[in-house]
Image 1: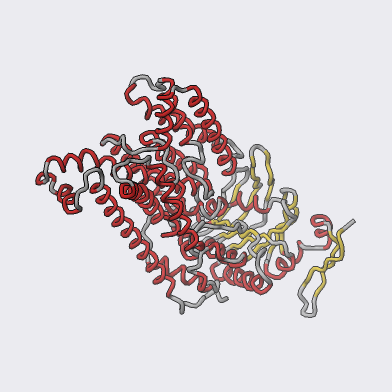
Image 2: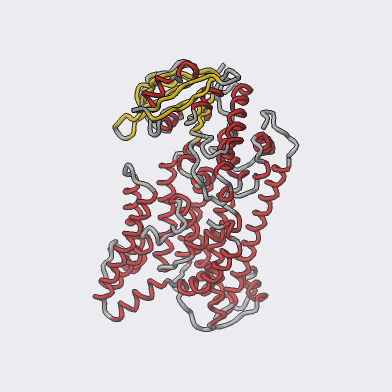
Length: 252
Length: 354
């Protein structure tokens, strides 16, 4: 079982700590964890720190079969429009081949075929990146992140450019994939209803600190929404008994 | 969207292999075109030799007439090879500058490297000041080289500061261009008529002063830089997806960018110091390569070198055919011949241009 636990983690930008003292409960493979918080709260910074793209104090305890390998933890940054003259297929291959030799093996290509098919983007494989819509680029980014088979995958707002159908599809897919591959998926979200529905746990970041952590249904409360997001909201069960957030107004 | 996925669509692998094969064929085509261009370049001149005579002088120098052998091997060959090596160096420098600076306008000119070299050369031609006094006979190229490397190292040092972005590096480069051009104008203003003519001629760029030593030196830079870039080809390609993405793939962006900048400086400084300012190839060569083979550095890198080499070599051929007997500055011809060609390419294939 893959487990991840952060202990007193902080991230340094220059000499200032922009994220500090993040200590989480143990996160388990097979589960999705939402990372929520207002804009500029430090969600992306925390992800970069966990991926060791930034320096800072604290420790990351990763326990898993490939925990020693650098690619065990993968960070999928927010989408930026790329204008490179590369096809989707090449861009995914590129992610797979970093740090390796020039030669491309058949099984590597077969895996990419499989990955693109499971994300339903096989028909885009030989389009140039510049021709894709925002949503299509997000799906390509997901393929680029998955191609290395990470044990921990951190996704920075992967659904931000997707229409409703794609949001539900991608989140459902990641939820099932996490379970199937026994992978820990950390996912930065703005839509808290998605967090309630798809994520077992939720971490709340505000001003670079972890202000709450635990099972999503316990963490996301009207009180939290008032203090962290500054909105008055109710959390009510729908006709099927699932919890939904209803925003009333911004809090005075 | 199922986790199992459908393996029904297996065509991706095959299509990818086809794509790679197509690109290798493009590289072979470029190589063939280069060989043809080189042969034509050797056959044309004040004395025209038929191609078969050129080829026999090339492959069986012993059996050729002495005069033919001297003209082809000692007079035309260094110039023809210089066109190829300089074109290759400049296009490769431009390609990697465009890659690491994420800017389609980047070329050895953008960062002020050519302008610095021009100022260094003019300093020697006008004031007779040798920055490196031991080798006075090579004063002009050595001055040019030292100034070009100084400009590069300045940019290198600047780019190691915290918080310096790609955009600031480009802005600094443009500032350097203006600074060195102003200094060059100042020197021209103060220069004697004779020195002024020499400076103007130098800044136009010319291959006529090619020697075997210079040819070997420029090829040597290529031979050093190509394996280095080749080793980092996946990482360099990843840079084109943006810094965040490349970093998330595990690329050490900072170190890669700095190392590449050093290679690029050498690639730009050495040819410029030998042949003067030859513009356009460094900017356009990579764009043509990109349109032909895309940006996978495993093919983009050789394609850029070949495109640059072919551009300069073909220019040399065209200028000899248009104005037989006259040797025009190659830098001027490259731009005049290349611009319409480049426009035609962009309009024909906007999808695959930057």
